[in-house]
Amino acid sequence: MEKQLNILPLKDWGLPGNIEPLVIAGPCSAESEEQVLATARLLAASGIRILRAGIWKPRTRPNSFEGVGTVGLQWLKKAKAETGMFTTTEVANRQHVFEALKHGIDILWIGARTTANPFAVQEIADAIKGADVPVLIKNPVNPDVELWLGAIERIYEAGINRIGAIHRGFSTYGKNVYRNPPHWQVPIDLHRRMPEIPLLVDPSHICGNRTMLKDITQKSLDLNFDGLIIEVHHDPDNAWSDAKQQITPAQLSNLLDELVIRKEKTNDAEFLHTIEELRSQIDKFDEELLDILASRMEVAETIGKYKMKNNIKILQPGRWKEILAHTRRMGEARNLSTEFVETVFMAIHQESINKQMKIMSNGKSNE
Image (cartoon, rainbow, N blue to C red; front, side, top):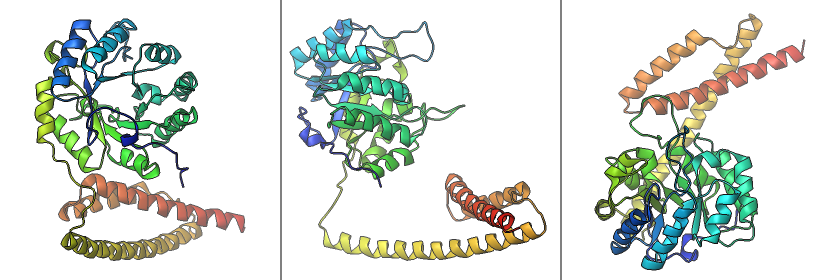
């Protein structure tokens, strides 16, 4: 069981404006004072109270725009003074933390590449110690919930209790409809293990384009996320970085107006009665599934004993290929996704292998 951290809920962070859902918006990169102020004014006029902008941009390859640097912090400071908005930016090392705090940045965030590096996260944690500032932590580039948890714990141990997690999707090889596929099970697992942490979505980096932003944002809210951090530019087509995934303040307003904010709970008696009956059915099916799985493993153990007796290898790739193809077809006929069926049966197959390996090991130890 995970150690419960004393992380404050968003309502106790002292943030301005509405936090249900929390909306953080602004350009991918601070490009000029004019651009930052123009975007901030439009966002503030539409009711957004927290401005984001990248000052230092960790790029995949050199010789591309890597942010304007410290001078951009002055522009954020000016935007705050004029609009009253809180400001937030990404930090990736000790010096970034010192500069951001010196210029009055209200919220810091740690990017996906940094989260993947415990040395870098610890450097930031050491620099932030003693400060009273909220920190948002993006998931690591790879779908590793342990790295994400570790980064959160390092910042918490530095004395920070206003911590949030940002889901921005995960890097993948090859073509995909998303820039960074969401793999929703990873943030769900994080929230299961650390239910006290606020969870935001970064639809801009998941999608990599403007067209799917609403769909991803709605899905996150349906999954009980607390808000979003989204890239908004007063002239996105001419942005210096990630132009395709940025939208205008007006487009953001339209997106937010179209979102459906669902309730977490209800006191409706009919709903509660119906959901309880359906959940009872689920519990019954789960019990039956476990009984079937237990019977299947007994057969797998018997097969393992015959393999040992006849000096046959445990892993039979041809047989596994047949099982997988057959279960895919059966799954499709039952309206089950191929991904789900493969995940379930790979876990079942691995457990069967484990049991047969144990039988082989016990057989050798008894010789």
